[in-house]
Length: 106
Image (cartoon, rainbow, N blue to C red; front, top):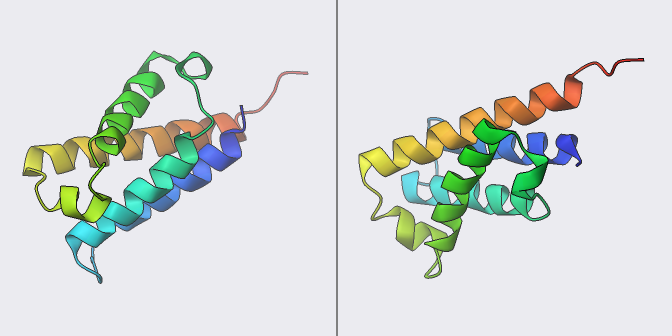
């Protein structure tokens, strides 16, 4: 697995979810979901540990539910859904960054 790409995309998604939302909150969430989609495109659950897999599953649920367009769907997200997405993105970004920089044993 290429941890660097996952780390970069999830970190970029996390940045979109942080204040301020210059293009509006819905567009920021949409931009974050675009990054998530790109980051998770080639990642399977088998490549992740249990916690990272749970985060990816949460994010994928938002991606699957966004068939009508990410910004339109984001407008209807509850505060709890936004928190759930933000937490999953944050935790997966941190996990992937750790795995990318994790020292390999010699």
